[in-house]
Length: 333
Image 1 (tube, one colour):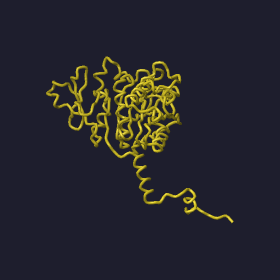
Image 2 (cartoon, one colour):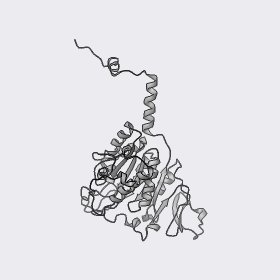
Image 3 (cartoon, rainbow, N blue to C red):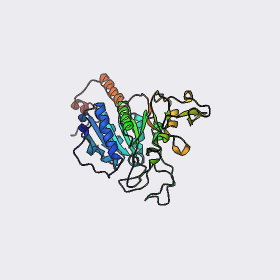
Image 4 (cartoon, rainbow, N blue to C red):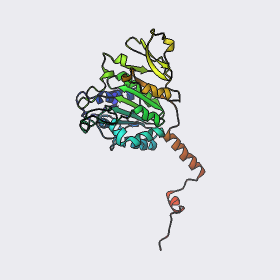
């Protein structure tokens, strides 16, 4: 039951914060997966998102700024049987933690990274973050930023990521489903959760989260199914040369047969990248759900296998024998 994963600690986020929904969805996902709380660890860095371990009835580690992925790697390598989750924000993981983020993905450690993306630094009171759009006005950019933002999908695919999903904080059903699929995936799972900060960046995701136009501005991708969207599934995604194009089915000669079928499991990430970077600013819906999920060796299992192989070739020694037979032994007279 979800309540089995709830901590008795009082929750201290701002009223209306999207983090509440993410916390609830994680608890629901773990209940659906039937993972024992004592076999679960939630690791975080620093930021509003990083309070999450306090509210989970699991093992947890509130670490230091940007280092959650590195510490989670150590946890998973030390005990590969644990279900390990990282709660991190766009500032925590993509700024000071950027190096740890990409190398965790490159190694394909079997952990699940929940990337809360509200495009702002919330805990430090409203500075622009690595995902803030060019021209964004904030306390640290009063005249607008002159930088282009990171796009988490690009970083994930550039680091040879094997799993990337996306969800809205208010779309709890898809969020739970995506978290469940992330947990089932063997390797580093990155789930970008578009989350609202009601204090410093309220409404940043309204163009896709508002129910009045959400159906037309988002597309929920499902492996093996047609890429259709719209209130009546009257729209679809087709190939237009090398690019993707949103069309209305039945108009301009386009039929349902022209609409692409989503293949999250193909090794080539070219189409996954195009899907992940779709945006309403260019007349395309924002892709939600599991965008990429491919199989590859995981770091902690290969590490264990390597140790076992070396131990087969070398007789196990006591610690005393190890010390006395090493090259760093000397005698004091």
